Amino acid sequence: MLKQSLAAATTSSLLGMGRLSPNLLKTEILAGLTVALALVPEAVAFAFVAGVHPLVGLYAAFIVGLITALIGGRPGMISGATGALAVVMVSLVAEHGVQYLFATVVLMGLIQIAAGVLRLGKFIRLVPHPVMLGFVNGLAIVIFLAQLTQFQIHSTDGGDTQWMSGTPLYAMLALTGLTMAVIWIIPKFTSVIPAPLAGIAVVVAIVMIFGIDVPRVGDLASIKGNLPEFALPIVPMNLETFKIVLPYAVILAAIGLIESLLTLNLVGEITEKRGGASKECVAQGVANTVTGFFGGMGGCAMIGQSMINVKSGGRTRLSGITAAIFLLAFILVGSELIEQIPLAALVGVMFMVVIGTFAWRSLKIIRKIPFTDAVVMLLVTVTTVMTDLAVAVVVGVIVSALAYAWNNATRIRAVVRSTPEGAKVYEIEGPLFFGSTDGFAELFQPKGDPAAVTVDFLKSRIVDQSALQAIETLAEKYEAEGKQLTLRHLSRDCHRLLNRAGQLVVEGDDDPEYGLAVDYSVRTGILGTGH
Image (cartoon, rainbow, N blue to C red):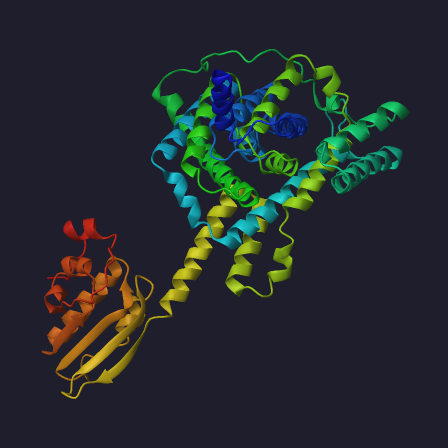
């Protein structure tokens, strides 16, 4: 009994659960089944985008999904083959073939592992909230647009595709709407079965009973296959190969980590969990490295499937593990059954994901938030739709940083007063950094000031090397006029890093305590006074 209890407790801990109860097991397994059903058409579609066989996408969904579920930074997250990575892979596959893709995925994984070991994932906290809102909204739109391709008819001779019309279109729309209605209604009556799974089951039953002719999963491609087999990528092991795969590997690693870490934060808000960024980087890296050796196209976190999972009650590692196992079972033994699922049911599930993912409150607050934040949110949304998520996030962070720097640059000012002895005191307010150095210099009048001048930094903060250089330049100007300049309330770090102006600092017990990230540049002589 004791051994069984210890084994159950260990399993429970590994899966991220407090206790293994029958009700919890049922919820997690059904959530995993729902996710697996939604993964099939996505993996097949993204494989087509990348220009590889559908099984390459399905193997990636299985391996990446399983490994990240086991060791990832956020229980409940789902990973697999994604469109953001597929659009980058297509040119590599077209020019060099699928074996170079496998080699690239291996290198991509190693880069992601290095990022995790170096704890670079913590920098995701620098992504501002308006960027997160834009990311979520843009991704919801991308998911919506991706589902519209299911309303197209692909010609058998490889010609142009056409939009559905007439009875096929009405049937597709009706079944999609029915799926959405079931997903919306079911939670009001029961939580025994995940709403998305109930929607799929109802539509499958109706199509089978009434023999409705609608597009099915099997119309995309056959998903039948064998177990993925280990194999080294068949590419020349030389410098030329490395030069080909490295740029793609770096881009794929960056996109994968950005999308995964943003999804981690989003799932964390829903499940009220924090942390795990570096752990997720390592997990994504291990998953992609293994995938490259087993004929998969690599992947990252999938926000759509993650939302399906958490909305279906999946909160532990078990749901992600179950999803991966079900997906493998579909490939090995259940392909004929899965291929009969109407695409309309899966489209309906994804449309509900879109509704649940889009930050509708952002439409209400857009007129109330600062103008810059509103611009950033809209910019990230549009860029996500027009390009990809990684570019959108980078653009949003850069614009936010520039806006922040500009706002702080305009905050530098001085309260000027005179002492009974006739000296002039400048009390600086606002941060002194590269963006505010010009405004700082304009505060002073070396030629018109009295013989004794004090600059008080109690309400300011010296931020960077440019700020130190501005103080040095100010000291030179007053020295050239033959006037005494005194600097007060600078941190000990500033005392050490300043050159000529450091001799003018008056130390006090109330000096602030903070460090500057310019120690190396000063010690190596990059910061100077021109003398």
